[in-house]
Image (cartoon, rainbow, N blue to C red; front, side, top):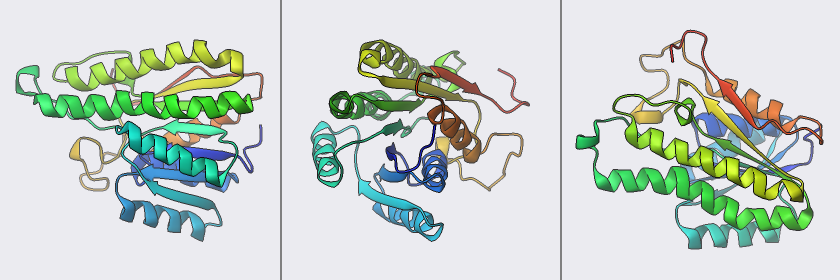
Length: 238
């Protein structure tokens, strides 16, 4: 299925996986609407996409704030009557023993990874239901299917995001809305306070690998929904 002239909202799109997804979709003719908290990074991403001939718009947004999400969707409705694609990519986390995990950071991780996905879907699904089509892609993690020591907080958030996605898929399929989940393994990104390119691990996935997977999912024929896609570097033991 051609993606040309589709409209996609991408959260966490100022850098890393989100930025790569936005750039990749823009090359296929998608009008990408980027959201993140850092306006400067968003502006740089929009400029980068524009230099390549793509069409991009950016909005600073805290996806864990329901009022902000509602206002954002209202702004989007003034720009376009339809939204074809929602990519819930924004996510945070780090690893530590449970006894050393700060409650405040636990709340923050759950707010972004779980509540943020919920709020974006809550406010955008009615738009998709009205237009009788749409595709939601949630970027989870392979730890939505497994656990590891010192990963309780992050694993819990991704298990919750995965369960939410599975239930939502059953809820909206009657409205011709697809829900897909991507489960990346280790990726060379800014996650867990990492800086890409510093002590680079060439055995990890790169953001473009995940972006290609998202394009594959979105390009499936209209009658096909790819529910889940797990992607790992071949060297990863899991």
